[in-house]
Image 1 (cartoon, rainbow, N blue to C red):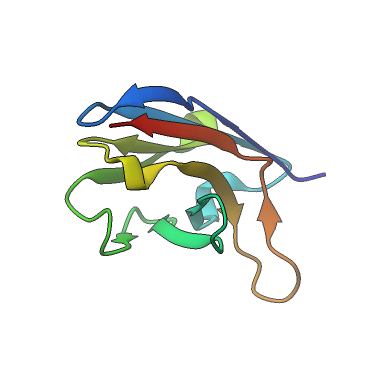
Image 2 (cartoon, rainbow, N blue to C red):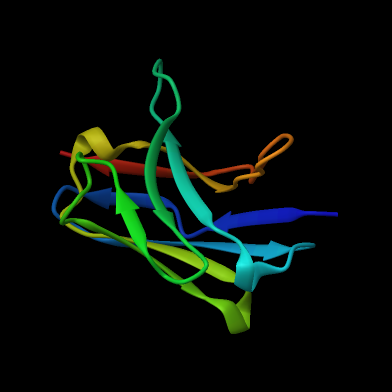
Length: 116
């Protein structure tokens, strides 16, 4: 049974930093690409960042240069370091394990609130 558990969200002032974690179980984590998405109130869920099994990364333009995705295969955990946070970064952040043939796996999300 695949489980993705996000943590690390909270309330932070603009310009501050947070680090999100996503602990995965039930998958062979070391060969899995992993992603972060977010959903702001009243908006559709959007892609934030991706990391391949080999460590290659991709980012949405809106977070490039401010957010860093990383992984620790020994801990089956993917991270999202978020710096220089802006109020528009306020959202529920979700961990995602893409599935080529089938339905992606999702965590339950962690709320990030950035105050002005």
